[in-house]
Each structure stands twice: as C-alpha cells, then as structure tokens.
Length: 547
Image (cartoon, rainbow, N blue to C red; front, side, top):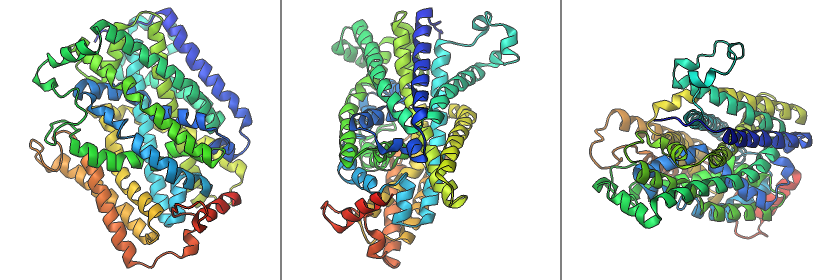
C-alpha cells in the first residue's frame, strides 16, 4: 500500500495535540497526594466527566482500526458491539451495580469479590484481569504502530535528514516491525508521563478533551467519504454491486449458519448475555470511574450519560469501514488497514492531522485507562494484600506509579505478538473470551443470590476458565471447522463466552448448595436489595463511611 507523507501542518497539529495532552495531564500530578487521589481521583469526579471518560476509555485505536476493519469485511453487524453490547448493560450497571460498588467504598472489582467470596477468588480474578489489561495494552500499542507507520514510515528517505549520531544504530531499515516498534516507544513515553504523574484525575480530564476531538475527527472523514460517494444510497448500491458475498453488509443480524464470526446466535447468547454485561459490570478500567464519583447520583448519572454518547459510536467507527469498502475495494488487502487507507486517500493537508489526532485521542484514552486500572488492581489486590499488608498510603502511591511503569514496559515488549492474529479486533475478543464468562457468573450470583458461597465462587471461576480454554483448544486443534454447528467457521469467541458462563454458573450453584452458607453479617452491603432503606443498603453506606 502506498504510504502518505504527512504535510508540515498535519505533523504540527498532531504534535501540538500530543504535547498539549501530555502537559495538561501532567499538571494534575500536583494534586496527587495520596493513593486515593492517584487511583480514584480523590473520589471527586462529576457525572459529566465520568460519562465522557467511560466512552473514550472503551473506544480507542483498537476500535478505529479494528471495528472499521471488521465493518469493511463483514458489514454493520459489528455495530451490535456498541448498540446491543453497550446500552442494555449500561442501564443495568447504572441502577444496580454501580451504586453498590460505590457504596462499598472499594478500589477494585477483585476487592468486591474478595469480600463477597474469599481471598482466593480475589487473587485469581486480580491476576486474570491484570494479565488481560496488559495484553489489551499491547494490542492498542500495536494498532498505534500500524497507524503511525502508514502515515510516517521510518524509511531511508524519511531518515535521510536526521543525523546518524542521533539515530545511532537503530535498525529501522530491518523491516516494518522495527518501524512500528519505534512508534510504539514514542506513544508509550507520551502516555506514560501524564498517567504516572497524574493518576485517574489526569486520565479523566484528558479523556474529556479527547472525546470532543474524537467526535470531530471521526465525523470529518465520514463526511468527506460520503461526499465522494454521493450519499448513503450510492454507498449501499456500490457495496451490493461488488458481489453476492456483500449482500449482508447492511444487516444487523446474520443467519445462524453465517460463515462469519457474528451469527445472530453468537450476538445474542455470547455478546448480549455474556460479553457485554461482563465488560460493563466487571471491567476494572470501566468501573473505576464510577468508584471515583463524588456521589452515588454522579455514579448513576455518569453511567447513563455514557450510554447516550455510546449510541453514536457505531457511526464513527463502523461506517468508515463501509465507505472504505465502497471506495477502495481491491486496494486494501488487510481489513485492519481500511481506516488508515481512507485517511491516506481522502483527506487534504491539515484535515489529515485533525483526523489523526482523533485517532490518537481514542488511543491515548484507552491506554491510560488500562494502565491506571492495571496498576490499581496489582497494587491493592496483590502487592498490598500479599506482600505488604501494613503498607503506608505513601508506599501504595509509590508502588502504583512503579507498576504503571512496569505495565508500559510489558505492553511494549508483548506488542509484536499481536501480528500473529488475523485481526486486531478478534485478538482482543479472544483474550476477553477466557475470563468474561466466569467473571460475569460470579458477579451476578454474588450480587443477586445470597446463597452463593466462597467455595462455590472459587469452583465457578476455576471451572469457567477451564471451560473457555478447553473449548478454544478443541476448536483450534481438534475440530473440523469447515462445517456449522456449535462453533462458527472462523472464530468461536462468542460461543465460548456463552458456554463458559453457563458452565461457571452451574458449577457455582451446585458447589454453593453443597457448602455452608455465609453468615448474614458477612453479606451485609454486598448483596443487592431494591430498597435504599434495606439493611443491606444501609450496611453498604456504613461500610463506605468507614473507608
């Protein structure tokens, strides 16, 4: 694919944006005086900032590149990941889970599970989500490297004007992977500076700015693309004319025997019933914003505000894939490069820098969220719980910053592995598949069923993990996937999520019924009650006040 050299104005806009975000985020470092300030922004976040931060924490480089690429390849069916996959679980989170998490005064989801079940469940969940967040960081870094390398390839021509003494022996000429890695190092430094210094408050405030930039830049490329095509009608006609394999590109639900990863059965059972609620109810990077809310009302309102904004996201990230297919079918061989190719071909100087800044806004917000959340989990649930139970608040703050730096280094080193997957978007779904089903089972049963026991939760999370890994292994190595059936022909992550959830629920219920129940005293404030005046709700408020 032909590379596009960005103009001087484009590069100026991009660098101005990145440096501005870095310095603005770093500014909030002066307000970080305790671990509570670092991990939960001093529990002073307003609803409007929470909602905007939640959106850009979920939508990043992965979505601009990955979802538009899936839209290019499969059509608007991937919009379900933002409509069915966000709106219903956000309503559930706003009125049940977010208020109880907030009242409990917790720092992390594993901390809640530890109180509800036992410390073994807390440890396993913390390790799993810590590893996932590290893997997610690596995927986002790789997506960034791809994007930068498409626009500013570090080839001999580009490097000719830079003194050799500055570059030393950097092997940019050894291949595109080295070029991508150099850009990954660049973005790691920019995001790392303000995340390490400012903590969650820096993350949320920069997210607010980045949401505005992301919407403006995303709408710009859609407007130019539709103008080139002549509108929505010509867009559909052009895609339908490409052949019979594109006749389902404007269908939200595909047949059960569809050879894509997104048949309607997988969308309903895997996405709507498991992956989506697990993500919005139990993802530390998401829940951490509501944990830092200044009031229970702000936690609820922020979650609902996020749902409203999220309804617009498929327009920004799915439609560009369809426009790219209509305009450049045959030119793009890797669907993940559809979005970069559109920017390359469609936009004039200056506007390219704006859209690239929108891409960077999504990337940086997702990266800083994952960094802060991973550091919170490993500091509170692992380091403090098992290595330094009597750590002072100052020590927790220092360890949080150290672990943030460690996660950056890990993500940079792991990033090249992402290229082994056929699609960036499916790579993250496969990582999520292993833990989402068991996590949701424990959260739902723990919050809504008093009879669930610690041994039941431990058996449920271990069995669910075994189910998901086992099914993934069987599909990849033992099954003939040329036909239809339990798994789709290409990638079964939606079905694996569903069946691992069902298996985990079954094991948790059976073991819980066979083991002694928890005392009412232990469960106070940890199990949902619809009445704000109930003993459980009052216990949750007392527990928070005690924090």
